[in-house]
Image (cartoon, rainbow, N blue to C red; front, side, top):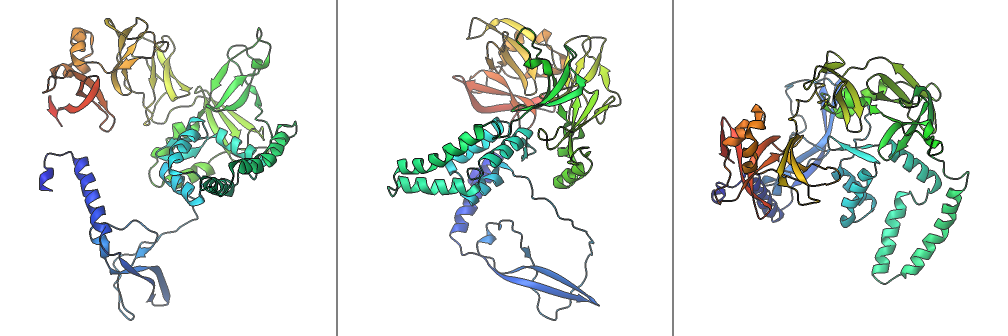
Length: 485
């Protein structure tokens, strides 16, 4: 450890982890005894089930993995125990915890589905196709995922069975080992699958994902009634005029934002699972089938409750009124660019405030407050883009400042700005960025410095690059000066 002075903390922790793992694998395993402990207190009998440690073994250098077994003290029959503290508690049955990416991989391994080389593609595919979403490191099923699973399970029960994939993996192993012919494996599968597929394509085969009519909600463009549609991008309202001939077609849509995005469910204090159960109990019930309904906000002025069995059930409830963001005293705020008012809207990326007079927008933070205003883009015609004879614009985004092509999105080119490039426009930049110019234009090795964003620390810092690649050097703004870390 004395040789690791000056090394990054994460590198030291990684070294210690490898060292402990190596030493532990050379040691004897720990030994435990399963114990049922009965304690009598007057007429009450208390019971605890767990285990006691007989020999610590490798756990002396490597802490044991967390298990459901409780480690009990080593007591003997007849010993008197002192009551230190009494914690009365009441437990209710909880649903199984939601999968994380890691726990889902463990479940795939347990059921024999996939291989280590395919786990990453499985996790990314179900998210890219909109079947699940990742929030707070947990996977939540999306509406499209529920519909696809329900339709496929009804039409292809054998194909959707967990044992099918595992059994097919075994057959492929036999093919690789030369015990089976791959053509025979495919013929046996495709013969039955073709019949099932043709049956699903028939008129009364697989149930379609039909839109649900919403006669009480009208299109802002043509005033026709809207329809609830479910796609890979989520749930939204589309105009019924979309099915008309091209010359009469209306492509009007309205975004629907789940109420949970405003309720800040992920940041609720206490147990996340308990918060989900509480949220489920507070949902309205469908007037047609009694199923829990999903709540959505329509541009801050309407609240739409849709049956959880949609599109198979067309039940819905529409509430009118002004919906306010938690933590906000009013549904509108003053615009920071003009004299207008910014009202609450919902979009595909969440709730935001949009000005009624200009094109200014501001995101809504998880606290319910509007995000701080961002710097106006600064055109830099002298900084030429490498594509299509374009130039760069300096912008401020959620991940700090960056240079983007002026013809974006037609020209998709972005890069971090060099500090020396920004000195030419120092007078045009806001006061909150003037501290940047106290930094160096070169690192100790003479490489040009660039502005970078630390996702871990959520702050702007100055790094450097060599031959177009970022180096490991960097300085951070600490107590009025740039300090190397």
